Image (cartoon, rainbow, N blue to C red; front, top):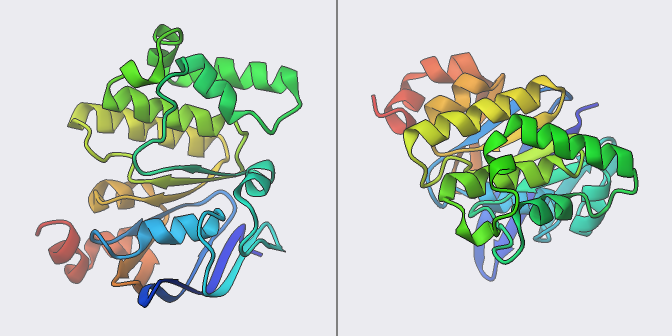
Length: 236
């Protein structure tokens, strides 16, 4: 059974159908990319998976359990974490306080301490900035902090929403190197990303979403070679 399975998911905002009955699955240990233009419904899909918006129809199964519409905090406790678009850093708390907030559902204090040290090893810039407030960080540092905070929840499945948005190329490379390392440690990843080339190069499989529908799915290598994908998303 897939770690994440979405079946017939439909999401509406008033009279607007933002997501139109999609199916997708992510297997344990995979990194899967969900690509598409602005407004395609990618972020809305992630929000429904992690309980922020309620679907109009369809099912979300995580780790074999129907979690459709379950409160977000219960999913965090089960190991499902979201790094949101826009980062959501708590600007008046320090970097370390933001990281500790990521572990708010955990009671394994030794494990939390160990994971904090691991985050600082993965993201040494955060160690340097640990006493600074989140609002004083650069955009790239805030993205690092958002990823570190998610790692502190000890995720089994990590949802990432546009981690490269608004960042300089060098910072994008650092962020994606971190995501690779997290995935290499066994965390399953569903990656929503407008940089389709980078997302597919990192992933095992991919889905293409257009106007609220999944229009194409294949291995990442096949999607990178697909003429339609290359023309629409890779600028070729």
